[in-house]
Structures are given as structure tokens and as C-alpha cells.
Amino acid sequence: MGEVDEAKLDEMVGAARAMMARAYAHYSGFHVGAAVLNEDGVVRPGVNVENASYPMSVCAERNAVAGMVLSGNKKILAVAVATNVPTPTPPCGGCRQVLWEFGDAETPVVAEGANGVRARWRLGDLLPDAFGPDDLR
Image (tube, rainbow, N blue to C red):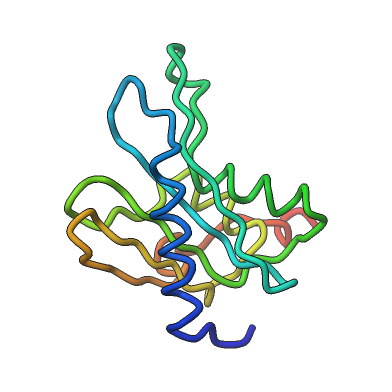
């Protein structure tokens, strides 16, 4: 997988931050915007959607992945997450597993907190020894 340049990552964080205002975080107040870059070069955004039945809530990262799949794409080149809390927040465990399905160990994941501070990981660092499609072949 090729490197994703800083300008593209900045664009992705901007898209995630812009979409964050549309999050439906009625219960927690934890607004999250996400964006995935897929193989056609398009940035697909997503937001978290909470539900009164908490387990039915869907994270922003998974909604961005759903948008990517709906567009006919199947490969994540990079992930960006923006939140309304000061500390950069990485994807939750369930989202890491979904991202792994379409990314790989080298996929960059960038998170930005409300104060503009960023953190960066590789997906393989967030989900070491991941279980994925290759384990089912």
C-alpha cells in the first residue's frame, strides 16, 4: 500500500471534523466524525449515531466504512477520526476490527481532539495479531 501524504490526511481530518457536527450523540454528548480514504481516492465521511438502546448505536468509523462499501469500494488506504473531547481518541475495538477487514497493518489512522492535538498510529499497532479474512481461507 502506498503512503498517504500529509495534505490528504489533513483533508481527511477536516472532513471528519466538518461531519462531526452532524453526529447524533443525544445520550453521551460524545460527537465523532470519521473519514476513510478508499482506492478511488475519494474520502468517505461518517458520524456516530446513538440509540436509546445503547448496543444499537453505530460508530462513525463503521458508518464511513458502510459509505465506502455502498460506493462499490473495498479498500481503506487511511482513516481519520475527529472528536469533541480534548484528547485524540482512536477507534474502539469493534471499529478496529471492521477497519482491518478493509485495511491492513500499515493503514494510517489519525485522530484529532477538540483542541487540535493529533495522534497517529498504524492499524496494525491498534490491532496486533488481528483476526481477518485470511484466517477464514
